[in-house]
Length: 299
Image (cartoon, rainbow, N blue to C red):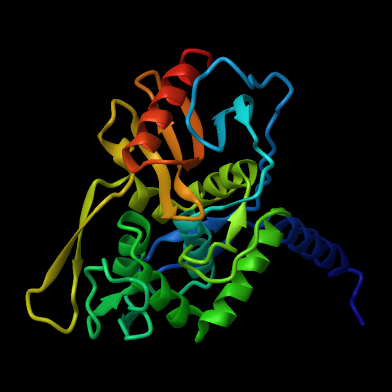
């Protein structure tokens, strides 16, 4: 039985407990001894005053969004489902980081990882840290790295893809579905609208933002003495007059060339630019610059 003299103290302790229970921000400790706040956000875009004409573009879908207020400045077929190729890897990276795996954990590139990935610079047998695999997958769009990350996170590719689709549902992405983690499968589809949301959610992860904004990076091969593999960002917007805050390229034949990127101008204004279905590698960046130039003139 609680004595009357201690009853007010009990009430005070209960009040403190309830306060912190409802206002606590959950943290995940990483191998870098940093604390990443896991704060749930919901992104909504305002299409009411979006322009749909006035620009000559060679692409299937496009969006330009004022990142800071969610206003859509330009939209072309934003709800049309399309393969998104390696833009898929943004969700892949979110799932890896959500699991809280140490970035110093290593995984060996296998023959299965090498399937349909002949252009990779990560050879079979290379042992790479999760941190460096993320750099390879996000910067250089390396498919072997993406498969290795899936295995080290969930044990199998199939189990990992289940987690990716759960993540998509959690983010409210109704038109986005994944069949594998690299984007090579043309059934990995989304819309320009939901790709923009994926980019915004990915940007909330400090490590994804950091990796996807870098120009170059050296991956260390753990089981080879003094062996490094140079990686370069496939997002050529890092060489434009705009600062790249995040982004991801993608290409398979069914998708054509794709790009989702968050840009900042010298005034500090930020734009989200999505281009899908562009019939040319360099053309996608020209179209993205055209949209960025147009958009920053209307922010």
